[in-house]
Length: 500
Image (cartoon, rainbow, N blue to C red):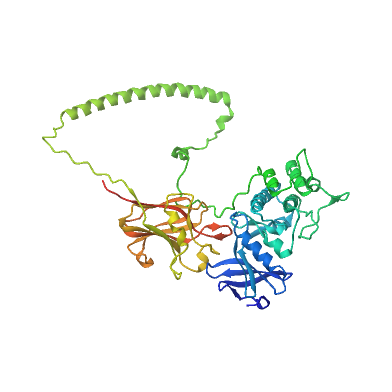
């Protein structure tokens, strides 16, 4: 397919369906598209036949795809074959710094925190030999999932034909411009980025504190050291992204946006002792406004209280004595074992952990009925640092593509299930079911427990006796993840009632 014929509805690589043309410039077109296999939105760049830098763009995209920093846009695919060139990357939902600044500068430390995240991600990229060179307010995004994303690493520069003799310094200056914009709502650069230009004082850009009241002095200094590449407050210029990241390291970082005000339904663990729930706030009475009167009353109450306490102690001691005498008498009259057989103690059953033979992702609609099966064993390896996860979906209800998706465990033989402990991601919003049966067919797996709006460690106990060879953790609703929705299981532990 020739790039000159690309229109909405066209499909690339038999997978990516172009939906909406976002913008077009210089022979490069950005589309919002749908990954039909994973049912998620993606960003796709296509290029006209006259575009001169296709090879550079595809090469840059492939290099960027090797980075794993979650604050950098993930590249999924890049190709230049048979007259078709395209780059597929993550579609990011959220508000860019430009949009956040539409009503004026943001809170200084919040703006600095966004730039600090970008600086750390960019420092990581520079160690891998990748640069940005196009740091503008619309490339820094606060996502709907409450995270920071820096768009366009390496790819922007290749598309625009940007280069530099000192890319580290240029990217440090770019971070300085972003910080200046966040602190003032003005843009200290030559290009038109949608913000009013920074005011000048005798031909020199005014410092942030000269433009906006309330900017902390240390942030003003950091912005000047990065943007103007000059010492400030006895500190040297910030000439690399790593320098900027270090200077902003102590800025409080933004917290993820809350998804719901309701607490996780089954994440009931608490570090506070139970007695804390019995504490009551002090009650205020009019008499508390008369200290001398209260003091006399307290003295009288204290004397009466001591007398009453003494009487109670004496009564308790007497009761204990009588009780001890009664118990001793009864023990003396108890028949010996030979005269009357004693009752056998009730055996106690200690739950035992059942090791799964295998674990795999389960998708009832997929051609192979699997979803990320290669990650399945990571959920039963006993390590909290590894995980199985679903694909990412455009909505919490799995993009309305299916009723559910999950992880199925094969226990090797029919086993009685006492409970199953599932370790989920910390973000609430997951609805999960525990299903048990003797076949991997969904219709044969019966729901024995449910958890709504779950997060963290969840113990799922069957409401009635459940036995089966297969255990399915079934997501019917997904929690948010980086602007989309994804279910994650770090660990699954199956317990059986065991034996005496």
